Length: 179
Length: 378
Image 1: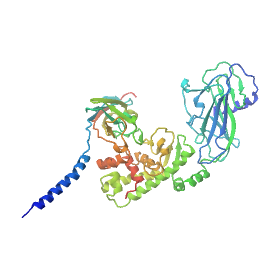
Image 2: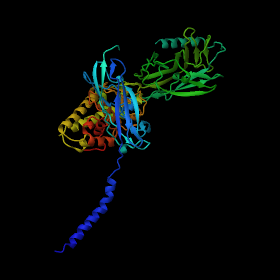
Image 3: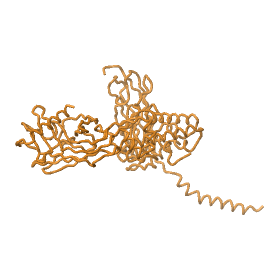
């Protein structure tokens, strides 16, 4: 049986497929920079009822390039969103801060972190959570990074690169004492 | 009240001493007032133009909060209607003693015109001809401390008097009087004028309880009524849609991701709560925010919504609209849905629905976009 025409047909189809698929393959593979960011929270082990409850938040850039991080939904912007989940002796605490609807991010909302450095912010979470009962309080970071970029200006709304951020949970012991 | 009594007595004494001889320490500040228009409809701001002129030959430093500039500065005017004093209902502002940064200096002959917006500051609920006069009494009107008895003055144009009380060093400054017709703000004629512009607001006004704080102007109040009505329509639309047969529809999955009947019902519960708020709860809209945000709330404090700059320029309906902003903010209240802001904007909200549906079901913008439904999905 002469199979040559059939082979030629297969080869032609394969070549055509390569011709059309090769450019598509190169476009479909975005270069995803690997942002090596991690966080840590610190707080005093014991805080008296009624005293400020300072929480220090560290954001480390473990990568080799400087990055800009949108500060929304993190402690770096203060209390404009709810990025902590706190569970105390009486259950989950209500967040008493603001929730803000915003438009596209501006340049001033980004935090630049140089390679292999960290940025730190300390906030008084006692201002927006009621630590009014003695006992242990578990604090989890439940925010996220809504955009991480290598560029200096803000990303366009369609070009945001969100990234999850996991911090180890911490525990604060609220102890009785003078208010 | 005390200040108003002092102002009233000062007005009487000024009429008796208008020809008092000048003394060595003498400041001339002429204040004149004119209405921006002779009559004001209920849905319009009540604006008056106030002109401050230094008619003396030395510079005058005036504490800036006695010069209205669009922000609430306190009780700077005397209003009356049919001879009856009109009460001040605006904010009472506690201030520290003025510093050099709080002064505005007028050079000899220099004038400064400021436009003051009075609706929201005075009880303008009744229609009628209002007499309006600028009048303040304070120990801190002028920047430099003054010593010695000043006596009573009348500036050359007879529009301003200065009166220093020996014990309190109280200075009073008055302008001329002007009159204008003002249509009552909260009576039936006010509602009628709003309805002329937005007939669909009828149901809102009849069933909703809307209150204002933070000195909402008449035009802002009108915008809020329309926005609340639009939000009500959106909430009704969302509830009606979700009352249908649960299914993996494009509209649901685009904004909330993976379909299940339980997920569908969870989201439906959120909109039922939001609809209840907009239909029958006392919602307070606050206009004091001057930030670039659309709006904000405190989730533990239903149902007060703080409206910011981006809200006023947003379209009434559609993507990131006034109506949608109210849906967004209402979803934050813990009693409604207790949503978070995991992602802002349509693109990010769509991505969230794919990557994390459980967060999407508690994301405020996802609720807003589902309710706005622009472009429309089935």
